[in-house]
Image (cartoon, rainbow, N blue to C red; front, side):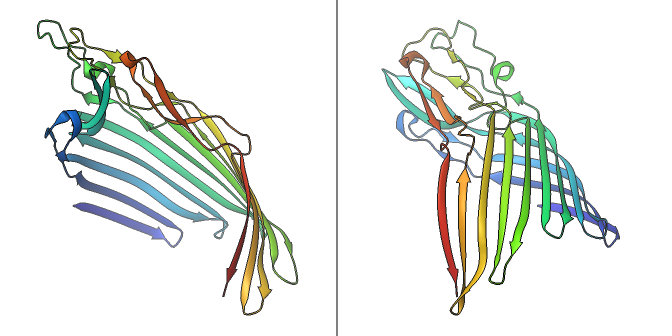
Length: 276
């Protein structure tokens, strides 16, 4: 369910608050996990924010703060048995998170719009399963103390500029550039990699997704009248700085290898779009 409250003191200002609950269904694991089930996860969340138009609508400013309590989290777990790796989902306790977002966008002139976005998130796990070996007399590793927030950079920024370069008798030429930055973040909350008959609990070092700065840009000739339709020709480029960054990784620990997948390198192309 959700409960929302909004107050609009003027045509250009809106204040709001929201409280909501949600869930993700449970299921069953295959492979070496047999029919072991994982259970429903639940979230209780709140958000407070403001949306506004300023300077006769030439500037838009939106901001919000939020928090949530995440229970019975479904998280991936890697295990190995006799040299064979397998994965599955387990319920990983509870996490408390909070953060905020800011969005600014303004019309510098009739031909230029600029924008800026910022997001922040904080919080780790309040509860996480311990890592144990096969010998019950040997203490387990404290999962709550070692687990970290994963795939959630603490700080992310982006800025863009959208410019109309020329207005022609047949269409217009525009340019767009976007710069996005993300801090480094662990790929997974906690890797346990138990080899068959391991007496001691085993924790693999977290694989870190590097910080990255991605620059995308395009220049387009729009609304070219051809016949009964309109043609747009767009020259674009992605990751123009050719940033070399991983977007997924697994440390297989005792198997003595690490896998990583990387984002696309600098990529360029031309699009032709005809609407009729």
